[in-house]
Length: 85
Image 1 (cartoon, rainbow, N blue to C red):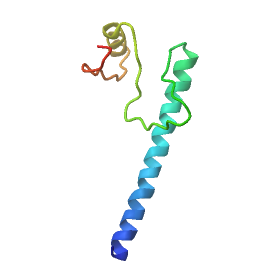
Image 2: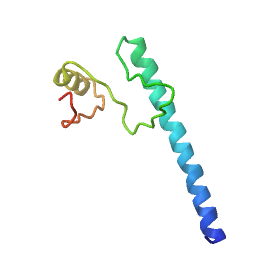
Image 3: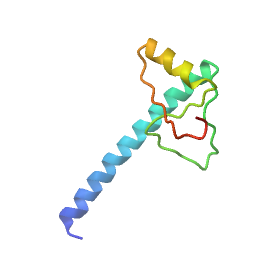
């Protein structure tokens, strides 16, 4: 590998680490806020260190939650192919 490619790869890896750190921070904010509101969150053992693109939330009445979010102008995404659908 050339020195230029090696430096480029190193730069990209550092950028990726910044993105990962930010996504984990955002997920921690969601988790803390949801727990304060009494919402059950995802519990993983310490060996798992996920990096979420979207924070998962399981609800009993998805339609009602999506309707309320829309009314409050909150952005939620529904995944219709999830096992809970």
